[in-house]
Length: 331
Length: 298
Image 1: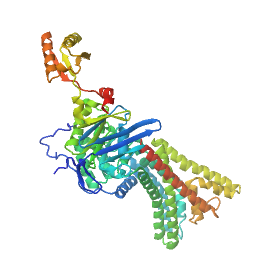
Image 2: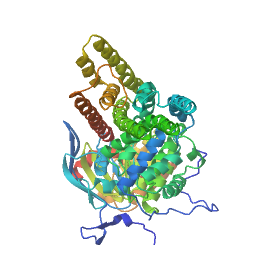
Image 3: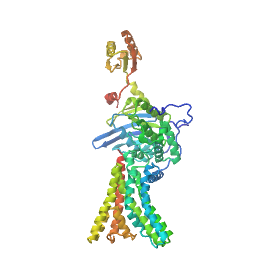
Image 4: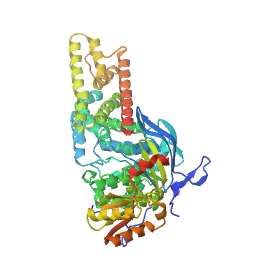
């Protein structure tokens, strides 16, 4: 039987399997550097699958990961990773998790192949097992012939893959991916996001992935945690983020003139509209138009009446800033 | 990125695509991981398992320090001499420039690289914690430096046995030299390791180590010579506390291992020398642990 979801199984103190449970739990986790409050009273649970951790730079994402790895000591609070306490079982945790740091961490004069083998051995795999695993994970992350070249000559995309390979080399039960899409072009970014999704689903490894782009995490994660200035802003299933927005975006063929004609016409029919770039953003419709599809039909009819070519009609995606703006009410 | 295959796509017809496989085998404990790191570090100190270019410096220096020993052995064996012209401990002292250069050149390999390229973060996210990691690195360099000193003296010893020189005398003298070499290697590895872990540019690290080992030792030797010339024997001995090489020579002199110093190291001085040597090693180790712990948490 494939071990998908094995990370969700947590053993209690008696060693008995108590079924699916949280992979990470924190309670009142706090980290202060003098006057700088990197994390404040963070209480959150992370389950199996892919969990996105989103926040602006300096929101405390990397600090949280380092505390969970036992590299930093929290100022206060507790946390458990895979059923192990971070205070006492740091070594046991580091045996079971993989970590892909945000910044460059690859020696330039070593090949990805040699490096991944070495890192697998540093996690406790024997020489031949390490070689086999390294070959496997390098294939999964998509490093082929270039794995034998020194990593100093790699593109950013190849470096990110090599960093990911070393994090997976020892078959961890949980991986921390710190900004895996940093510095990637759109195509490489999509590849990386697909891979992150596959790690969570096909590989059966729980993933905690950080980003400062909510839209990016929406694509891959089952659950999203939003941090702001060290505080928990929100923690909910990814779907909730999408459901909460009732706004629509409409784009018509033509220039700003056509856009404004549509906007004004829609406003007369009782919708609140505002221009956004080449599109019209429609706020969540009032109650009489809120029924399923009514607003969509209205937009279609208005565009037809005005003789405008409807190019795009889509639900508005929330942006990180929106969560920050109304975030206080959800905590 | 166009030359790399799309990830996330199953590629039909590619026979080696087995899907993700989990690892259910044995996972080594911390002692085994530490031993692996130690062996890798020791090999890297001699450029083994690294590029061909990085093997040149260590083996060139090793060759230069072995060559005089081979000549001595050749002469003694051929002429059938009754004693070696140089003691084992003094041979190491005479090749101190090479030993210091070896340590200065190779310490950055073990102590600067991981910090400069930040791969230390990847190590510390694994079972070995910062204190163990830095101690293992230090042990690798210590053994590398010790081997560098031990190989020529071992050749001398074998040559002496081959020439039929009194075996028990030679064995005692050689074992004394080995003990002193170990202590010296611990000091040198600590000093060069600490310097390399602080100054991450290889050039600065090498220059710093050369200053600490070669220049400082030169200054101390000069001060000792002047003090001895001025009949200030205790001053000459006291100054010797400030360099690993003068500590080594002083202890070798006190232990009758065949090294001459400007003034005999006697009375309470041997104890002071030994104490300073141990404190030096301990201080360097504490410094290394603090340094790795600090960098690892950044």
